[in-house]
Image (cartoon, rainbow, N blue to C red; front, side, top):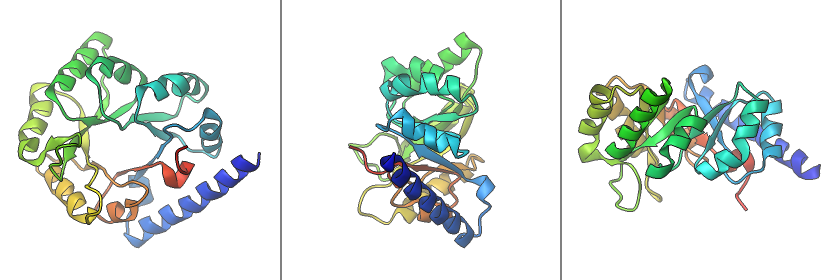
Length: 224
């Protein structure tokens, strides 16, 4: 019980910091979706957050989705589950079936599989295209040089409902440069939704126009 109490105290303190960051940026809090990334965290902690009125969550592994969210979604039907991790080709269908929003499209093979799922299940989902704004070879995401042609293909060839763009800036650099780069790219395609900003840089992301913030550690604490 003490562990849950301490967790909720930290969670509520973070919400105050988040709200202040939105006010400082002169933004409307209703235009920013705060995604509580619950990876590796147990269902009982997720339930505590849901019971405090929260409904938007994120996972980065399909195994975590299967282990926790099939039951949680049955129990809490209004929750929205975002997939924010790397998409493995063989697991694309499971991700499509179990998640409401997919943030990390970065390969045409994945786009083809998602389109096939939409046609098979007569269902469309919301998508973000992940952009590798730092062109880092070890990181997922479409490189900046290929980004415009890839976005165009997703929208006009495959007719996916691309909601916006997503990025994870390189470590130990000023994230603002990368957030602004993503924002400018989105403007070229009238994509106003920007999934950017995590525990360590969400305040900068809010100032740069983020509409979706993906926060794990500041809400749930460090992973074990």
